[in-house]
Structure formats: C-alpha cells, structure tokens
Image (cartoon, rainbow, N blue to C red; front, side, top):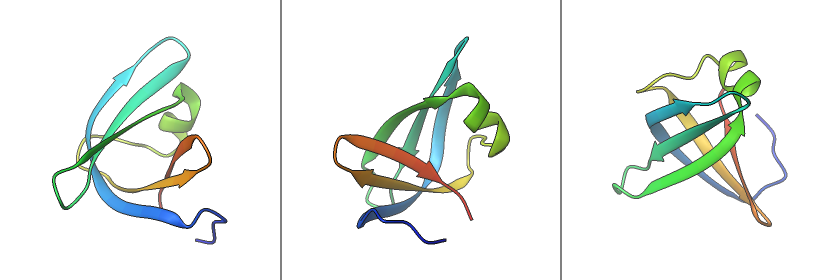
Length: 69
C-alpha cells in the first residue's frame, strides 16, 4: 500500500455503526487509544469491514481515512 499521508497507525475495528449513507468506524490502536472515522457506507461495505478487522487509520490534514491491505 502506498499512501501520501505520513501519520498512519495500525489497529483493529472496535465498532461499526452503519447509517443510511455513512458508517462510523471506531479503530482501537495497540495503545488502547481509539480513533473514530466517518466513511461512506459503500466504502465500508467494499472493504468488508467488521469488528476485529485489522485496518490502518491514516491522518492527512483534517481527514481520518481507513485503509486495508
């Protein structure tokens, strides 16, 4: 995976709340810190995210992005 963001943290999906358009993804980092991201429902479905999935939380400017590999 190549990504322009320099602040990338690996973690596991702790919870997912699916709405009509968006999904709220809570990622727990190894330190126990939680990061929350709002992504589209379609993106969450395409990445097949579920509780326990290993993901990356990537920070660039004011956005928190979720990535898988």
